[in-house]
Image (cartoon, rainbow, N blue to C red; front, side):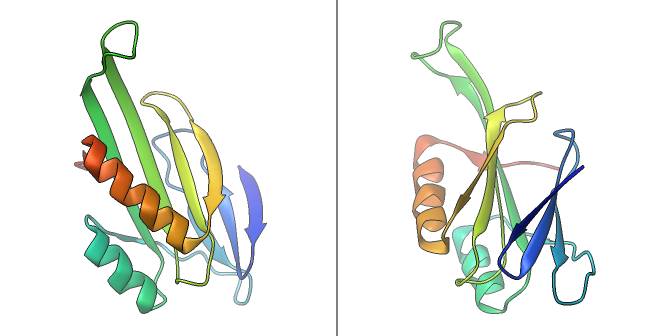
Length: 124
């Protein structure tokens, strides 16, 4: 597993898509399991409380831009508070995807865009 340090937190990046990104507090060294959230309101509530949160979205459906006419994609955000960077992992279902980092406001803007495009919370 890879360890990436961002501000007060380090993140153990998953090696398989079935694994979750694990946040590690740089202050205590403890792994903190994120709260699973399903809406923008829940993201804002968890972030304002300073709790780790994660939202997993999936899009499976028609996509005229794709050669096959279908897409199967995932998009995951992992964050803490409004002053912390948010880890975004995305890609085709069945792959490890790519990871980028956003500030909280940009992550919320992207989250609105994904919901508007038809992404739905993943059923675990």
